[in-house]
View 1 (cartoon, rainbow over the protein chains, first blue to last red):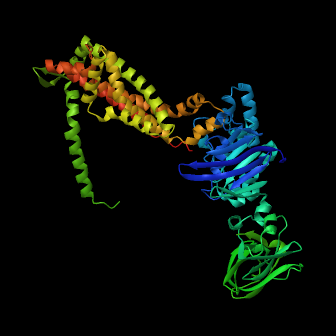
View 2: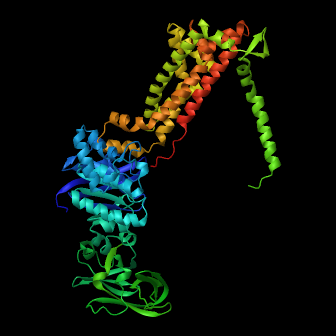
View 3: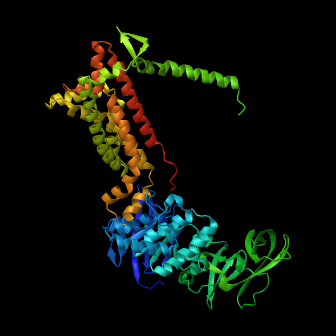
Length: 367
Length: 264
C-alpha cells in the first residue's frame, strides 16, 4: 500500500516540441508504493509525462526529482525505472526467458542468478511454461505479461506503463486490470499507469491524475474525481453527468445554493474549499450523476426536485437510461439512470415524472 | 475470373516474345561455350568442354579472378562497416547534416560510373596515391556503399523504435543495444546487402578500368581479351560469370525477402 513518503516529484515541468506546447508547468508528486494513473484524452500530454520520467524525452524546463534529487542528468539506462511499452517492445529474436533476463544480463549478473530470477518472475506472471517460446508464438495477453515480467525483474523503484492494455480485447483487458493490480500489491512497487480509459483508471488506481491539453485538471482518488470533479472538463470527461449552469448564492449549514433554470438547487460543498470561497453571483455548474436521480422523494432533509417528461429510453442491461426533458426557463435535458426491471420499465416515453436528488449528490463545479 | 481467354493468350504470347528478344541473347554464349569454335564460327555438330579447359589453364584469367575476389570481398566488408555506421547515425535523429550525408552516399550510385571513376582517378593522381588493387577497392566501396546503406537503413527503420528504447530502459549501454538487439535483427539484411554488393563489384568495369594500375579484374581482363579476338575462352568466361552472378542474386533475394511474420 502507498505511504505518504514521496518517491518522485515533477516540479514546474514543461515540454514543447518546436512551437507546440505539450505540457505546461506540471507539478505532480508520486507517493512510494502507490498505483497512480494518468488519465486523459489523446494529445493531453500524458504519455509525454511518462516518457520524461523514463528519460526518453527531456523536459524543456522544470525538474524531475527522485528522493529529492534531480535526475535530469541521468540517461535512460541509469534510471531505476522500467517501462512496459504500448507495443510491448519484446525482442523478437529472443526467447521469453532471454527477454525477461535481458535487464540482468546487461548488468553483468551471473547466469545462475539470472536463471533463478527469470523463473521467479515468469512464475509471478503465470508464464512458467513459456520460457522457451518466442514472442511471435504468444498471444497478446501473454506478451503483455512477458513485458511486465521483464520490467519487474530488475526491481525498479517505479514501473511505467504506457497504455499497455490498449491493444487487448475488452474481456482480456478486465482480466489484466485485476492481474496488474494484484502484481502491484504483491511486489509493493510504485506503478505509474497511463491510459485514456476512465473505467480502467477507476478499476486500478489509488490516485488518478486527469490531464487535458497539457494541464493537470485534477488529482485525487477515483471517488474524489468521480463525485467531486474540480472543473467542467473532469465533470464531463469522467462518466455520464448532468451539468446545469447557474449563479452561486449563499451558503447555509454546509449547503451552498445555486440559482439555475431548474430553480434553486442545494449542493453540498464539503471537501471543496474553492467552491465554498467563491463569490456570490459567480457562474458555476450544479453537477449530479444520472444514477443519483430518484423517482420518489429521498426522505432526506435537503433534497432537490424537478419535473419532466421522458423523451427517450435505452435499455443497457443492468440499467436503463432515460432522457428527461425539463420544462424550465430554457429547454433542458437530464440523463436518468434506473435499475432495469424484468417485467418492464418503471417509466415509458411520454410519461411525466418527478425527479429527486439529495444535496450531497449534487456538486458545484466552478466555470 | 471471367476474363477473356483470348486476351490472356495474347498477353502471354507477347510476354514470351519480349522475353526471347531481350533475354535470349544472354543464352547464346552459354550455349556456344559447349561447342567447338573454328575461325569465329560455332560448329553446332561438335559439343566439347574444351573452352572450359582452356579457361582453367589461362594464367591471366585465374589471376584476374583472384583479384576480383579480393576486391569484391574487401569492398563488401568496407561498405558493410561504413554503411552500418552511416545508417545507424542517420536513424538516430533528424538534421540537415544527416540529409546531406545521405545525399552524398547516394550520389556515386546515381552518377554515371565514368564520372565517379574519373573523379577518383584525378583525386588519386593529385594526392600521389599509386593506383593498385587498393584504389580499385576504394572505387568499388564508393560505388556499392549506397546500396548497402539503403538496405541496412530500410531494415533499421522497419524495427520498432521502442525496441531500442526498451533495451536502454532495461539498463543496456549503446554498444550492448547494438550487439544484442540491433545486430541480430540486421543479420539477414547484412547478408543480402553483402551478396548484392559483391555481385555489383564483380561486374564493375568502368570505375575499375579508370582507377586500376597494372592489375586486372575479371571484367577488365574480359575486355582485354575481346580486343585481341573472339576466343572460345570468352564464351566460357561469360557463362561462368553469369552463373556466379545468378547464384549470388538468388542468395540476395533469399535473404532480402521479408521473413515470414515474426509478430510484433
